[in-house]
Length: 264
Image 1: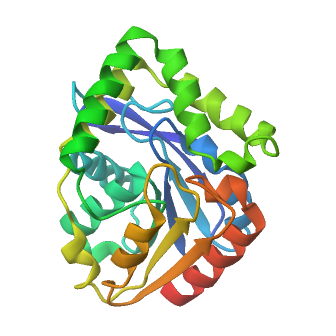
Image 2 (image 1 turned 180 degrees about the vertical axis):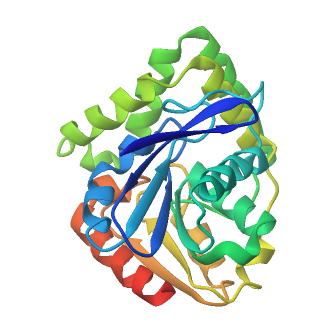
């Protein structure tokens, strides 16, 4: 069921399905709760799944010129407080993982587990920050051209000819994202903090999902980062890029269920 609540006088939209222990899904850049459609349908058979439209994405309002990861995390907390939920596992894809880490930093007592789905605890390198600024210029010049190219790059190159429906699905969601929302997210990601220290401190389970052919985050760097996790596990997707839950749906769902059993 689609629901809304208010955060800082603006509307936040989310999807609530299933019963039982709570799993929170946080989409990535240019996404919305809808990107998790098949994951929601699978996990909601056993869990209560809350999938949230992050600020400036889907049907959630923009909150300013830049959306920091902390601002987004507080927005997520508002939703979960509105639902009177106290303990849950967060699964964050890419930018959603950055938000999940900010949430873990701000609200450590609420988490039962954290999945970094094609995400990293490191901040942007100086070169990556320059890329973000170039992306902002590209969005302002032609939003649709930028979104189409960006979504295509999230899939492993070798999968492009096999996954046309999935690419079309992700692109249609991305195109709905406002220029203001895209720019605010790019600024927020550019200026986010490193939170790798959290990986070695927390006792709850952390799963890192890593794609061998990820064009955004090099798999070698993520594999090294995974070694620092105190209570960690890895799902290595040897045929996928940055969109494993669309590229390898069955394997992803199976491993997420295994991870959730560990968390709960």
